[in-house]
Image 1 (cartoon, rainbow over the protein chains, first blue to last red):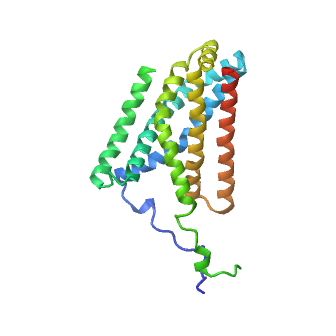
Image 2 (tube, helix red, strand yellow):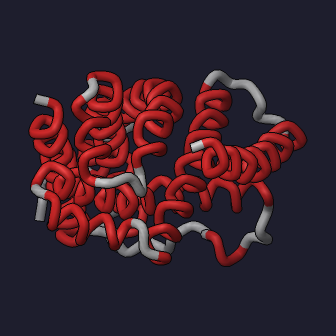
Image 3 (tube, rainbow over the protein chains, first blue to last red):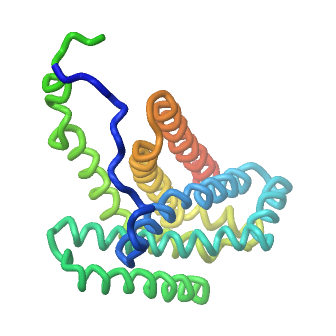
Length: 127
Length: 123
């Protein structure tokens, strides 16, 4: 049987051979935001543990969370959370076999980009 | 050297097996998270930057405690499966297995730590 070259086959063309498009870029950012949210999640869990532990330890962790760096991570996480939420909504819409035309998909891409920024600003202002 | 033909080796590994189960899991958790994300921001957002007593009082109330607990359980389960897709796309062999197991440990570790903290404040 033909069993030569098992597991050593050439890979199909990947990112480097394609011109960046709105659909591919929004998809890449969706993956990036979803996975990067673990950092915000771990920071919040640490902060919750500190809040349950005692006043002095809470002051220490809260100092990190409310420092300029902590605030940057939190702001980034709020945006990532909204972006990934809207990106997920788009995936659910696609899963229902709707919105797959290129024109519609690109419109949805812009909706995610603009929507995530607007919702982030709203979140920061309201909360 | 395995004594099976290439066809036999590939049989049953198509996307109709466990692949659909994982996709369904991501769909279920993402739909639930569509509801949980705004609720979590409402429960968690106002208390950031407040003092110790205010934070403890906030998570002693049922709504913020339950919404945050649900966010931890569903969110980190969603992450656990999502990050597995990421790892499977870029890592092979032993590295892949080690990373997937490590990320499952991180997900459940963070989930349990958060739930423990919430329980201490809420109960």
